[in-house]
Image 1 (cartoon, rainbow, N blue to C red):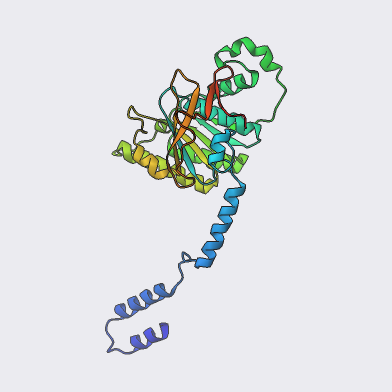
Image 2: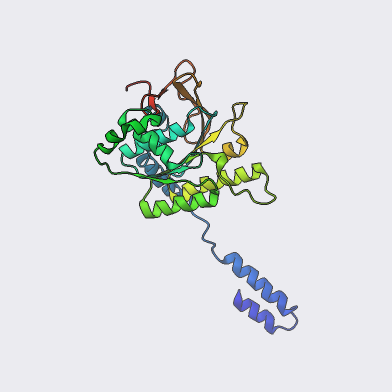
Length: 297
């Protein structure tokens, strides 16, 4: 192509030199590989490798009914969102999962946007002691006498955190401390709405950024959100679009029994985890409180 272009430039009868050089430039660009293209066989090999990793690296929540539905636990590179009405147990569920992950030795990040890290730690400590969190002050001697244990949780708390702040914390803790999961409580409290940005656009950007962060960090992200009076997440369209799995925790405030409704999923069958007549979880108020499986096996 270069040789032909030079010949045309030597031939004064062949148009403007600008046309010749532009044509040469276009032809060279069209011939240059971009690096974006992969053969179907290579993509299939990548898929099999990813499936092998997903099967091996599920992160258990410690709640058998939920882990069973997930095929062993939270999937790496996915965003799971759990919606609930106020006072249903969003923070308690996060503290339950965090406690269980520590027991199983899985380092993780707990982002407390509603309550401080000490409040979540109080729920976990009360569960370990076997008392209610608001009674901890009367059990200081028992807490001091607890045998030392290796901890696997890092807390982040800031009432003005943006999604960029959360992304930084997740990627930093992934590199520095090897976290294998991140828990965020809760979605609507993430700040940083830009000037001129609508609430829906902001929520969409937040959800999409966190989903991308789960891929970049190669870990699962589990995030709670507040339901409105109609039983759906505020700004639910962006949540449903960005999340790989969207669950709703159902529990009457005067009842201990709970179950989870599957709203959308591209990583599991869209089957509910229990139902009104077949609850799978119970809120144990005597220790923590915390959630536990109703069935023993």
